[in-house]
Amino acid sequence: MPRILLVAQDKGGSGKTVLVRALAECLPSARLIEIEANRRLIELEDRVSFFPVRAERGEINRTGGAAARAEFDGPLNAIAAAQGPVIVDVGANTAGSLLPLIGEAQARYARRGVEFGLLVVLTSEPGALANAPVLLDLAKPFTAARFAVENQIEGPVDAKALKAFKDVTVTRLEKLSLDERANDLLQKGRLRFIGEDLTAAEDSLTDRFGFAEAGRIVEDLTRFRAKAMQAAGPAARWLEG
Image 1 (spheres, one colour):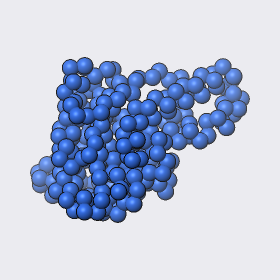
Image 2 (cartoon, helix red, strand yellow):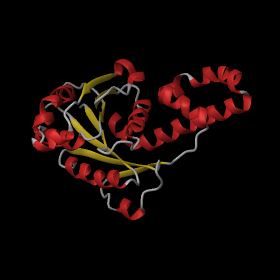
Image 3 (cartoon, helix red, strand yellow):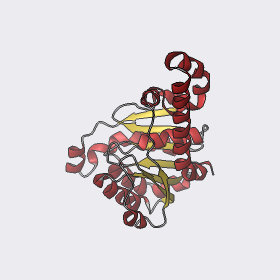
């Protein structure tokens, strides 16, 4: 039975793509579907099927979602054809239009053995915090599991707000202070670089920055990858089955 994990947050800058990359690290066998205006998961190469979304939010709202329907045909077809676990990176300003379409097709997907889960990203930013329960409610009728990751990139989410997320598995990604050069490497190489190439690159980093700073870079990046994978862990375990 193919399991599909939708990763969503309509507010940009929430760290959603970091969690998508962490899920990909947790589950190397999973395929990915990226629904974005531009490709971001380039380092994951042929694991990713990219579907551009070009409809403007104003046009989507004006037409009641009709402007986006044809654009979603590609990812909806790819989900129906899934043979194993799939991570779907749902771009900003997209989930509110996509989730109802999946809900409408739920019975047809079920006949194909497709099972859905949803992971939303929470931050203390008011727009992101308000959007998360909306997406969770939209997905509740057709999802077998729902997850939320509190990304503390902008500080902790209010504890009272977190209590509102019932029947949802909530984890936390703590804000980590990275060495400046470690952050530069993270932006360039992403989590895949940390997992596959960082140890081999340590000698080169030592030559460039010195033994002490190279050690801090390696330590910071290794810790960041581990924390991100830990936050994504429950969703990854569900996806794996």
